[in-house]
Image 1 (cartoon, rainbow, N blue to C red):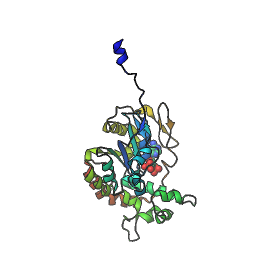
Image 2 (image 1 turned 180 degrees about the horizontal axis):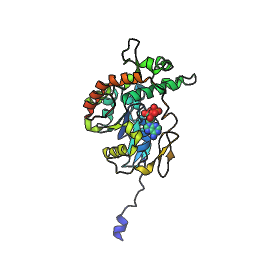
Image 3 (image 1 turned 120 degrees about the horizontal axis):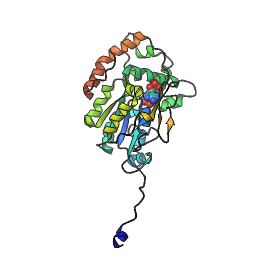
Image 4 (image 1 turned 180 degrees about the vertical axis):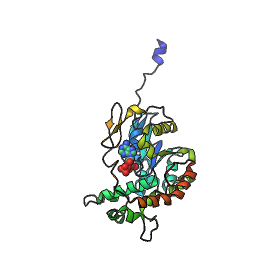
Length: 289
Ligand code: A3P
């Protein structure tokens, strides 16, 4: 009886907003949204719903960590909070700022074959050239020039009139992954960054997710039962006890036909850049030459 008196009644666990323990840092158009939604199928994962752009936008960063925390979802102790803002990867100030928040944060970098990524980026910019869309387009960090450019064929934008590759064209520049990754590796040890294969995430998500669960120290929970292939969309859709959904129509767009000679030329151009990326990550992603 005396013992029973001394025991405090169990307090129900209280959710709180916590700074993210893991970030999807990019790369844009490589499946960052799909990855976040897929990880959210895990019962121990909570996600920030929008892209918060805390580390890459000075006006947000100036608001401080309390502001950032206020943008996070409620989570229970032991759950992992994840945020994704793809422009983190390419913004020079971001690695150092992330380290200042938490030097042991887990970083997820999803990549795709760079020419496909560039065409996907172009497709997105082009979809925003309708008169009703420019404000939205500009909020993605593209200049008015880049947005109006998107009305031109991809071939004319990616290849300069003298036949050289136009590396100043943003969709090409962002596909030069090594040029951005080296900055992250100056700040974080390699083991803290997991490279996710975005092409494989499209083909067969489960093996990639299994790697990520391990990397995040999560029990293996996401499996085949969580996916079904939607023939109309041409992509996997997601389900668990509370969710049954496909990604929005802006994810998995039909790409325009690109002259195969241009694709070949670009693939050749990327060979040495891809090799530099493989060298940095210590892994060959097997992109076509
Ligand atoms: P496309 O629309 O060019 O096919 P992000 O979220 O980083 O913008 O990436 C968008 C890309 O996610 C899409 O590019 C699509 O290929 C990819 N993706 C991966 N898995 C997907 C899924 N299950 N449903 C829809 N899109 C998916």
